[in-house]
Image (cartoon, rainbow, N blue to C red):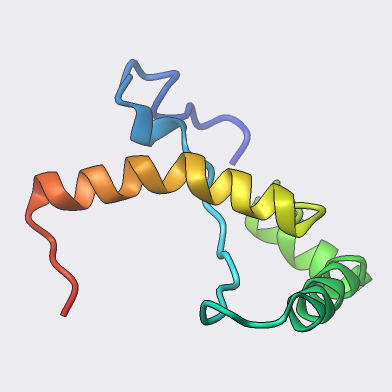
Length: 95
């Protein structure tokens, strides 16, 4: 929907509106790095496929996965501050 303005363009300036949506793949603490790398390789391979590229175009999903585990951790550390803060403000609690 290229002609629909974003929340930020409409004047909503809370930092949460600047976040990009993504679906991080998480693993239990202590998962060996070689396993994490295999999962990351599989995700990158899937994102290189024509079918997934076409789905992203169809649904207007602009972002490919981050390139490395270090990049994923960096994005997670930055964005999670906003999401956790919002959840706390709204009184959302994990069971």
